Every structure is written in structure tokens, then in C-alpha cells.
Image (cartoon, rainbow, N blue to C red; front, side, top):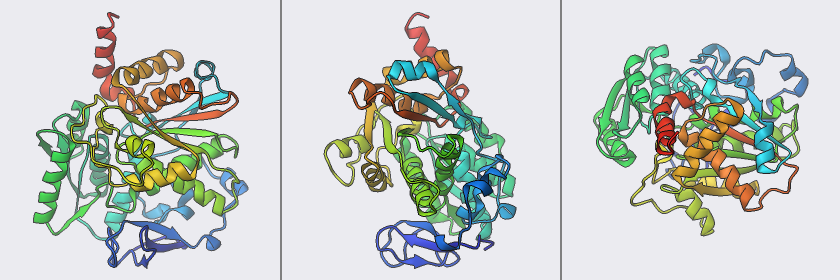
Length: 397
């Protein structure tokens, strides 16, 4: 494998064992725990001045903190997305600043491109010919795009409720699309059956691959640089599988380890009320979740009733003095419309859960009035424009 100098292997988040990334790819051989890339941080020489001298052109500008070299990366120059000042929203929330990190500018229109780039690179480094995953939609589209770029076959399992754009673009990128009736858990079941039947498939399921949240952590790196090395007080992130929050927390830990920052933001996981296992576990002061028996939300990307990374999400939000917040679908859709009208930015409904969650936190008195709040827009609104338009039609607009 063509890895970066400081990459030390894959560390088990449960027992702490470090294994060779060539030998293992998904689970700890000792205890079955999740693996994540680990680094020799003392060997990393990087500072603010060095980063300032580099083009702000891709997440791979942070290659020292990624497992693979930029030269070996499967990339479409994902990342380097804008952080947009939104003074009108700051006034409405009653805080000092609100900024939207607009991940809808990525190649396939979502933050999923970051993780897909790193994970598909890992697959190519291991000599895979086929990658596979279950997805609510955007992750499947992103993986199909990057697999196509790398010359790999992508097998994507989507629930029938996934959006038309996601389904269409999986096919356009050359992916093998499998639409499964029902909801996400049905797609997971079909994926597991397919994986069991094909020993040569390399899984890119969010809760299994160690690499997708490695892309997500670069969102934090960029936010801090774009704020001229000031750490925001709050980051609100729409949360389904939990990859984003896990990545943000790791990014903050690494920048502190390297002495680039001293503080870390309060991380808030935002979910839809119709499928909020992490919020329920947080409110009940538990370290893990109960699966949602009957999930039901218009926010398809968040309709994940049994998130594999929930314990890590709960640990991250508690460690950063953050929290978890859920809002109802009408409030989420209204937040998407309000953001569009006040800022010109377009959010998919699932991403708007972070904006709706920020409003709810403000109403609950969470903010003191001078905070800098970053809302991460994980997807471009035109992917689900029909849903947002239907909400307006329901209001008689």
C-alpha cells in the first residue's frame, strides 16, 4: 500500500490494538471492534504557515493527516468548500455569527465525496475490483462516482424511498444499483446477503470501513482554517450513520495534538424526530442506542434506525460539551426554505435538520449571544427540490 509516512496502521476503538492495514481492512481480529487509521503524530511536521502556502484546492492538501498520498488518491478535488457568512441567520438565532459550510459544492453534491475518495483509494490500494455498500442515497451515489473513476465495479443497495437523483446517478456512474423495497434496514439486509455471496467484494459500509470518516474529518480542518484559526463555539451536523460527527471529533483531536489549536467546538448531532436514536440515547444518558422500530421521516438521509457508530457519536458530543437535538419534519423543511430565502444557499431536507436543530437550540436558551455557530450543509438542495417545493405548495405558496 502506498501510505503516508506517519500512517501507523489501523487501531481498534474498543481494545486499542494496532493492526497492519495490509493485513486487516474492516474489523479488529482480536475483539471484532471497529478500526480507524492512526498516525505517529510526532512524525508529522505541519504548521499554519505551511498550510497557508498551499492551494486551498482539495481535502488532499492535508495528506500528512490522511492514510494515503495525494499522488495515489482517487479524487475529483473534493473538499475546499466555502464557509459562508450568514448575518441574517445570526440575528434570528441571537448569536454573534452563523456560517454555513456548504458541502453541496462537492462533485456529486454532498459531503459524502470526502469519505468516498479516501475509502475508494483504500480499496484500490488493497487491489479490490468490486466495492459494495448499503446507502440511503448520497453515499451510494458518491461511491459509484469514485469507483467509476478508479475503474472499480460498485454494487449499491438503496431503499426504494431513496431520491430519484441518487438512483439515476448511481446508474449514470456505471454502478450496479439494487433497489430494495422498504426502508434502509431492508437495503442493509440485501447488501449483507450480496456480500456473503461474493468473497471478492470490498465493503464500504459506513459503520465498517475505517476510511470514510477520515474524509469527513477534513471538514473540521477547513472550517478552522477558514476562520483564521479560530475554533467555532458550535458545529451543528445532520446525523444519520454518525460518520460526520465521528470525523469532526477526530479532526479536532488531531489539530489539538499537533498544537494547531487549543480549543474544540461543541458538537451537536441533529436528527429528525421520526428517526432519532442518538438523540433518545443522549437524553436518556445512555452510551448506546435502541434501534428505532418504526422510522418515519421525510429526511431520507437520516432515516437510519440502527446507526453503527452511535456509541462513538455519543462519546464525541459529550466529550466536547455538545449535545443532540431532534426536530419535526415540517420544521426541518421550513428551515431549508428559510435558509434558501435568507442566504441564497440550498440545503437538502436532511441537511436542514442541522439548521432546524440550531433554531431549536436557540429557542431552548442554549446560546448566550456571542457564539460563532457553524451549520454544515451536507447536500445540495437541488437533489430533492421536489420535496422542498411540495412543502411550499402545502403552505399555499
